[in-house]
Image (cartoon, rainbow, N blue to C red; front, side, top):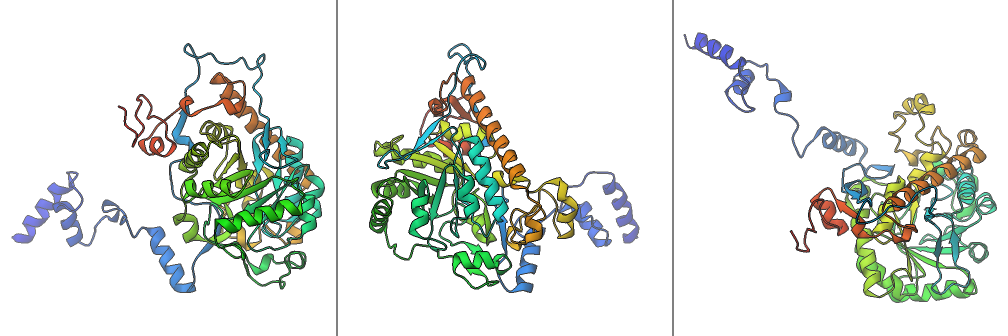
Amino acid sequence: MAKKKVKKNSKKLKKTNGSVGGKADVHAHEEGKRNKSLLGHNAIFTPEVIDDIHIKAQLGRYRMRGMALMKKIPTFDDLVFLGASTSRYPLEGYREKCTTEVILGNRFAKNPIHLKTPITIAGMSFGSLSAQAKESLGRGATIAGTSTTTGDGGMTPEERGHSKTLVYQYLPSRYGMNPDDLRKADAIEIVLGQGAKPGGGGMLLGQKISPRVAQMRNLPEGIDQRSACRHPDWTGPDDLEIKIQELREITNWEKPIYVKVGATRVFYDVTLAVKAGADVVVVDGMQGGTAATQDVFIEHVGIPTLPAVRMAVEALQEMDMHRKVQLIVSGGIRSGADVAKALALGADAVSIGTAALIALGDQSPEFDDEYKAIGSAAGFWDDYQAGNDPAGITTQDPELAKRLDPILGGRRLANYINVLTLELQTLARACGKSHVHNLEPEDMVALTMEAAAMAGVPLAGTDWIPGKGGI
């Protein structure tokens, strides 16, 4: 009799929507027919976390990959511009100029850098990238009237030969570093940290240590390389000041000296870099990409680019050095809107890295079948460390690298930078600005409380900045 009653009740419950964990679910479980989708996934031990644990248990080491973080965080997408209408008048695009030129490094350097656009190319090394990719970056930057940057591993003839304006990175590893190349460069960037892995050094797996890379870095061929996480002669900000003076003397005070930091304690890092004598400060947010590092670094170290810009500007303003020491922001810049928002928050220029590689042809659907053959797909490729990139960009395989035509790649990159610049001008004109550096925080509002607090602009429809009062 009891069994008949249970079955009768079961039929009634199946006709209702019974809540998870309610009588319907308990009864279904008793019958061995529980619908797992009713419970969903555990919020902590998700399928991705379980898979990660299995892989670590099998391999006995941490997971490594390239590209940038995967989790969602507040970005420039959470800000919008207040276009001009009555209280302010927009500029007519076909009649009224909106200039984009920028000068970098005019604090102490005899020869500051003059660029046509505030969009520069970030440091990416020969080793992580093919020689063809480095040449493409130089060609594209030159056509667009901007600068490119060497990255770890030294300066290649292809890069120097095709880059009108080249910034030489001075890294903790000292790989490929020599005074002659310092003098050949147009500016020097002292790298203290990177947005994807602040506090960590660079990594380059053995399969990418080709004979040429090994010779340039003075390393054994085919052996994994891990760069130092800090400069060997660096124990604090006083040593940074000494290093800047040394580099100025080597280059006869001609070259601007940049200092690059990964976004963490941004206010203090920028303050110390300026006091040490930097002409330009580069702040790289946690959306910044990398060729290879531990996944735990990419996802769990650093702060987003959005608050990093505000904190850097606040440091410069407190020292009365805003616009006197230029600020370059990098980490997740993808569109002209991102550029415009970074400049409105107070940056002088931006740097792009991952976006530049995509412009060259990385992640292209053209190679989708080959991406699938190596366990990925176009748009999902993040194994930059593996060295088997079908697009010929993040590889040292000579056959794969031949697929990238540096002339075509350079044209694509130049087109991309030019479009970003046009988008930047369009937004600046819409806000009534005759120069992109005239954009300001009050030209924007935030769509979320998180973005409002991080960027220091009001929540849309209010004058409230979380943490700063107002209603």
